[in-house]
Length: 261
Length: 263
Image (cartoon, each protein chain N blue to C red):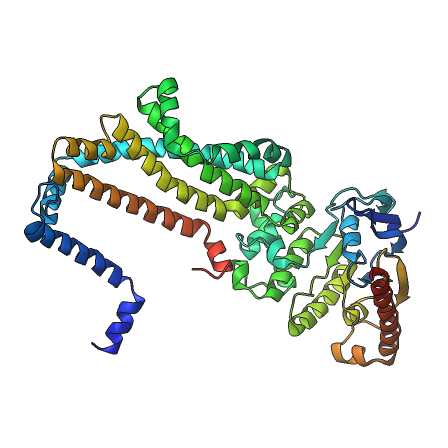
């Protein structure tokens, strides 16, 4: 093999894509010749089921349902987490008041809120939204206030010498200076919110990708079950890509200033 | 009371251990003067400047501007920080950084404010860089942005806290001459903190040297060298060299005294 080809392979991410294709091929071959079982369908069979369910709109319907409740819970988490985080980061009194509480609540795994929520909110749409909110608010909150607290004293002094009011200081300094960390928190929470959405749907729901996947398994539609998981992979991947694209634009100055592109 | 800017029996203690950074500090600055403040590290010269800017409160005493006590930052006194990478906001372009100092104060339309800012960028030699981000500029250029931003607010007094000490020698020389020109052209009063004796003597009409902590005034001398000053000629002038030696001796004594006290 030529040297240029080697360099190309080493430098690009083509190798990673090739690996995925190879693994799928191994799956296909193993299902065809090695493990002939209804629980291990061929990849082509899964893709067929995937195409069918995409064509008749079933997957689109479930994906929209998942997306909608995820975004509702996540959106609320962003609003609450960022607002409270900015206030806690800026006002020491609020930090001292809420930080211990946050530290106590934060280690509770998101799913463990579920039994309590069923008692108080029921098993409907609201329960799932609140579950997503509770699990995804903490990374945003924590990153926001630690971002604000790490703003340099010189920058606050600069704002003061320029005669900025508190509101102007938030707008011109606090929010942009903390935005790299806020966005980091938001990216972590985006993944968490999808996990909790799917979990909620698997426990009690009548739509969503989690519901579709579990239902397929229970009705022995194994290729559909895998198709559901493939859909979730694609969905999660796209969400993250879109987020990175937006993040790259918003905090371009940060990546450039810290020598990271 | 005829003093323009008066530091009146100023004292600053650090609450934790009650140690004074300086005490009973009194001096006044005439309008239009260029005063260099120098002293060993830890003598409180930077703290003093922060108090004069109203960024920090003294433990005792007062700073007065035309008789009026200073209790907070004022529009006619601008501060230039040593850490330009912090004080110039990296998420704003050069022009946006300069605009930040004027856009909330003035009632003028945006176009006019931009023109005002561009004029001040031109004064510091950055007319061609309004849309650059700080990370695209050298350190010297970033500090020029900070100076332009301060000047766009049309201050009477510039308080500068070791503004050039993080720059390399070439840029420092350029910015020193730029600052002298701006001082001359705009009729500013400048207080310039530095730990570099040569810089203090080259720039200042007057050099105030603080002693090691607790800081008191160790020397307060006029620098009888004509303006415009020239990097090579001024620095090799006989008066310059004599004054430099005298201040240098005093500074070494201060440092030794500080060391003896510490041990």
